[in-house]
Length: 387
Image (cartoon, rainbow, N blue to C red; front, side):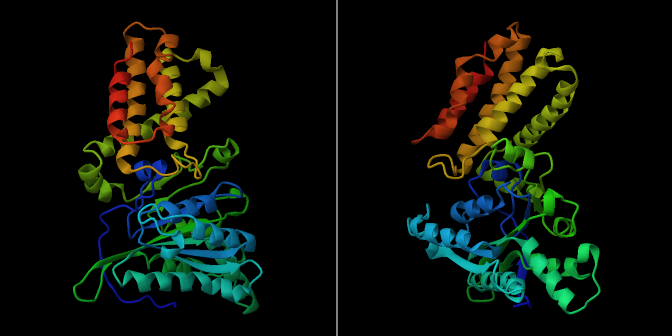
């Protein structure tokens, strides 16, 4: 289990589509890449990973519950038998492998569980399947490694973890990738690794998080402040990043929109500007800001509440196709441009922020039926022409 199966690797050129807007549009992970989800207690790591298991476009999902509570794994097993795969209509368990290691099992079994999961993933990858391996969590795996190392009386490293912690993590994450199978005819298979990290007290400077950051291509930092504000998924857009954006841009331009990368950069810039303005507001108050900056705060609120916030159990909005996601992103940015244009055209700030089209924009998460992208594009046109 600790020795990777030989394979001919090829560059990753397509994303793992998850249906989650903040991931697919802002911080995508390549199919065959590696993502890290660090977050403190209650920030939603398990919910994000279970959402990926339910909603991603992977052919096979291998879910490793490493040191999880027994009732959580029992609930996961029961729910996956009842939930249906949106692509095939079959039960989700038909494409899911659960590797269960509960917190009351021996530490030796916990240390082995992740190795077993990646080996099973390689088995399906070599048959030409695209596999998503979800490990929850690598911190408990590292704690088991620390306990075993202590019993073997090995020289401890930082915070008592063994000195080879980083190399063991690297041996796990490097088994992700897209490959050409050895069979005839050759096919493409991939393993996308998503590892959750549970840093004590939400401290991202601890050894497991730092070692994982050097290995993952995508970093989804779960923000305690967002979670306490009931904003889920609580992925902090100022701390998160994706190193796969440049590689995936041709795919997105061909299938989503020629201006996807420009719109993505504009959205991240809007959210970064909001953070700067909020620091000023804490000192002087919102009324001291120029009107255009106040409109920027309003546009950022729409971006957060209309686009980024997404309920994992909502029957309508839990997952959206990429064309709907991108049309919603364009609509929110159009609202920003329209409000600023209206202000510059002589409207007051109250008039610019009270247009009926803006209230309609706030309800798009409940839209159902056919032709949603076209409806959103029509709404974006109206928003850009706000009076």
